[in-house]
Length: 226
Picture 1 (tube, rainbow, N blue to C red):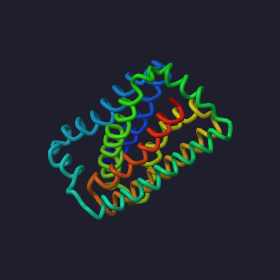
Picture 2 (picture 1 turned 60 degrees about the vertical axis):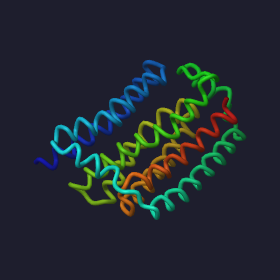
Picture 3 (picture 1 turned 45 degrees about the vertical axis):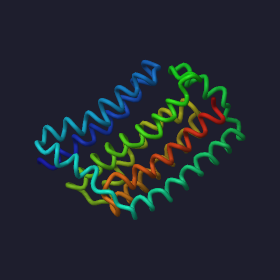
Picture 4 (picture 1 turned 180 degrees about the horizontal axis):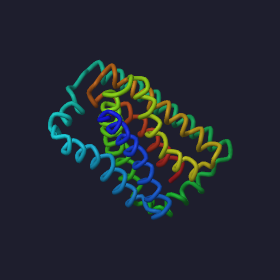
């Protein structure tokens, strides 16, 4: 019963992340509100409060970070470079397939992003977003799912919830067809990072890989969108 309750709580956390993004982007039309609700309250707040509630916050926090592993960092870097190149190439193809850069820029401006802040926004996405998402999905959700189910089931479930809120962003910016495809690709990235986490338990391998993938997004934003 305790195990089922813990699994149900983790599922609730997964849906909470999507609700936070929905509230920030669609209800409040604000990137700032989204960062507060999703990054601060969910990605950072949920693991900290849950760890404090369990009574082993310090231990879990150390386990989430782990020790620096050169092999893991090298593997994560190689995977991240490939993802970065894939994102840049994929966005180039989308822009030539009819996706309008001015439409995406208009939506982002409606959400509060201006040209004056694009550099800081890109830096935040690359460093903070990648770290907080890794601590949440691979460092917290995935690790606790492993207490009750097999590794691959845990990877699939955590990757599903990681991809779910990307559906909102993808559909709004690119429409249903491309938004669903992008969400599927995000799910695939989550599976890869979950697999990587199993081989290199510390946060550094997946974080650096995720950071480089988000760097691809930052390049697209700064070069083609703004």
